[in-house]
Amino acid sequence: MNGKYLLGFDVGSSSVKASLVDIERGDIAASAFYPEKEAPIVAVRTGWAEQDPQMWWDNAKLALRKIMQQAGAKGEDIAAIGISYQMHGLVCMDKNQKVLRPSIIWCDSRAVAYGERAFNELGKERCLTHLLNSPGNFTAAKLAWVKENEPELFRQIDKVMLPGDYIAMKLTGEAQTTISGLSEGMMWDFKAKRPAKLLLDYFGFEDSLLAEVVPTFGIQSVVSEEAAQELGLKAGTPIGYRAGDQPNNAVSLNVFNPGEIASTAGTSGVVYGVLGDANYDPESRVNTFAHANYTTATDRLGVLLCINGTGILNAWMHRNVTSDLSYSEMNDLAASVPVGSEGVKIIPFGNGAERVLGNKEVGCSVHGVNFNKHGRAHLARAAQEGIVFSFCYGMEIMQQMGMELNKIHAGRANMFLSSLFRETLANVSGATIELYETDGSVGAAKGAGIGAGIYKDHDEAFSTLKRLAVIAPEESKHEEYIEAYREWKDILEKSLSR
Image (cartoon, rainbow, N blue to C red; front, side):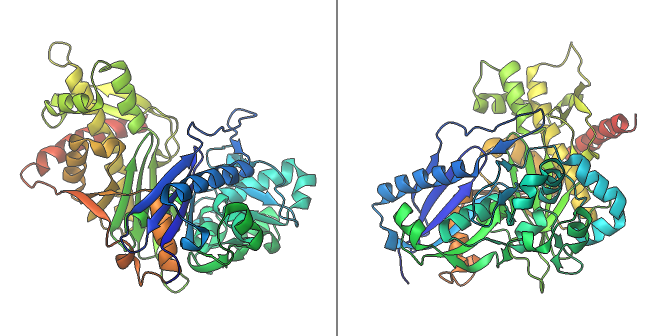
């Protein structure tokens, strides 16, 4: 084995994080991110969101330089490189690999109408059976916006890529992507098992615009002489893995098989589960992409439930109702109230339209408050219960698609720091929750180890993953949690029917 470390990059919209993982011990040798303050997102118009890809590259170099110094590492010490990245972004390159315009990133909404028009004109059933989603506001629709609104620039495009593909290109000089990447852009046909000709033809895109497809895990390409000199790496170092941030979060938590689920609960909340058969939600309330270990021979689909109104509600509650307490003290206060918050219910969807609700914007609302009985402890608990209930509402859709909910893997961060949140989720969903210490750049590094053949499989790669806690459902409390959820769900469905 050549090299002592695996290098992982995690290219987010806020920063780029880099980590070195010691191959033998499996732990983090060094880690850093840039910028230390949140990276800028340019919004020329309302609903737009753009970033300069060169900024990602510059931040990656700065983070890399810092971790190499921290570890006292040299270029030849790096055995393989993996990349995680913000999903759904559009990077347009000319034939000289020059960026033609700022990247239209994941949270930019300008292309919604283009995706909706394609969905209606191609037909709902055709789109869902081939793409497993509505074309929506994903990468292909963003490219359609460029074609219509910037035709001169569009004619100069040689290749379109995702943010992680751009970083890999800067490392190697090769324009490449993956099936998983194409699927997140709505450019993979799960029925034909090839690039999605139906959508490419509809938008008038030539097949040649797509980069070469390489495996998610495998020797995709190697560091070029030019990049090696620029970064202080060794030319020929393999790129062994790349994946979008949500599939990579699942990889980081060793979630590969049907029935396994990864979850995060920060400002917004995500439940990402693995499905063993190509399937979709007929109402497109959750998204289905190729998971990191999908191949044309083996279906491994990542079903993504995203809820905007999760941790942001808890933060709002802390800021406006319990500002004199720490988050830990607020959690203790909430836990002093019985299951069901003695009738107080909070619908948490106060952060814009929710896909899980058919893109309706129902807002946040508080129900059942009795001025003579309830206080801020009830509100604090009802907020956390409402967030859990919104997860479970979406997870019911995933179950309808054939997914089993047995085990939820999560990092110990954000809402998962709350024992009340964890226990409520376990008891309502019926799934056991396992908490781990990991992050995206570490997952990318270990993914590179799998792809480069340094680890024989994912179980070996993640054998040192530290499990911090296990929270199992409590049979004696199950019914009271379910009853509280039923009451919450009844309030939500009445508001949706108005």
